[in-house]
Amino acid sequence: MISSQKVILEITKQISNENLTHSLIAEFTDMPYIIALKAYDIFAVNQRSENVPHDHDVHAFKIFHEMSEDKNPYWLEHCPKYIHEFPKVINILSQDSVQMDLNTHLYLINETEQKAKLIALNTLQVSEVENKAILEILDVYRNLLQLFDRFEKDFLTGIYNRQTFDQKLMQLIHTSKVDETRKTKQPINNWLAVLDIDHFKKINDNYGHMYGDEVLILFCNIMRDCFRYNDLLFRYGGEEFIVGLLNVDEKGAISAMERYRKAVENYSFPQNRHVTVSIGLAKILDNELPTSLLDRADSALYKAKDSGRNQVCVASSEHSTQPEMEEGLVELF
Image 1: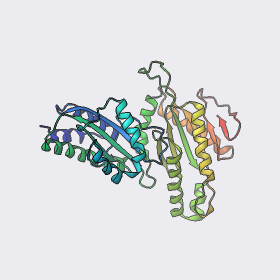
Image 2: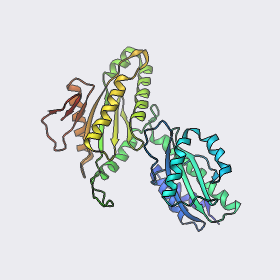
Image 3: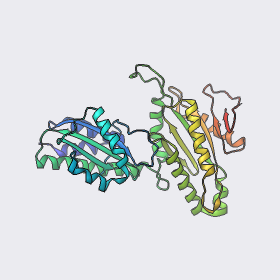
Image 4: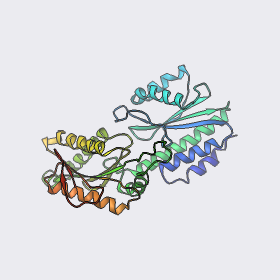
C-alpha cells in the first residue's frame, strides 16, 4: 500500500518549488505501484511559448483524469485556457515514451492564473484506497506549490520578488557555462538585464502613488507578454526590475530587450501618460561573482540614462570602460 504520510512528510521538508517537485518525483518513483512519472509545465495560451517544456520543473492544480475519450470533456470544461496546449502535451508524452492507456493518470495542478503543472503517472492496477492516497499527496503538493508561489512573488506585480532574485542569481550564473551533457559542448549564454522606469518619481509626484502602482502593474503585464515562459522576471525594488534571459546569443538578447522597450514606449498607459524604460544588459560570464555581474549591468543602465534614457545599453564582457555606439537605440558599453 502507498504510504501517503511518508511522502507528505518528505515533500513538506522542501523549501522551494523546484525542490518540492524533485522531491515528489523521487518519492513517487520509489513506490512499487508507480511505473513511470513525468512532470510538465503548461502555460496559458497568451504566454510567449513555442512549445511546452518537458523537464522536472513543474506544478499542479486539481486532480483527475484517466486518459480515455469519455474523460476529455473534463479537460474542456475546467481548463479552457490550456486546451490549445493539449495536443502538444500529448505529442510530448508520446515522444517521452509515456504509454497512453487506462493506467495513465493525468493530474493538472494550477500554480498561477497563467501556469499549471501536468503530472503523468503510469501505474499498475491500483485500488481505491491507493488512488485516494495518490490524490492526498497531490493535494498537499498543490497547496505547497501555491504557498511557495505567494512567498516568492511580489505582492503588487505578481512577478518574482527581491528575495527570490537573491536565491536564483547563483543558479543563473552556474548555468552560464558549457553544458557537458550536450554533444556539441556549446556554451549556454545567459544574460541579466536591469530595467528602470524613466522619471518614475515624477509620475508618483504628479499623479499619486495609486497611479504609480497601476503603472508598475501594467509594466509587468507587458513583461509577461514580451518575454519567454522560461525567462526570469523580478521586481528588484521600487521602479527597478531585473530580467534573466536564458540560453540566447547577444543578438537575441538585444532583440528581446529592444522588443520590450518598444512595447513600453508604444503602450497606452492611463491618462495618456507616456512611459519609457532604460535598460542595462550584461552577459553572464562563467563563474562570475554576483557583485561583478550586477555592477556591470548597473553601469550599463546608468550609461543608458546618461545618454538620454529610453534605450538599451550593453555591458562589455571584457569589462571595457570605453563606450562603443551601435546603430539605433542600442549602445555597447
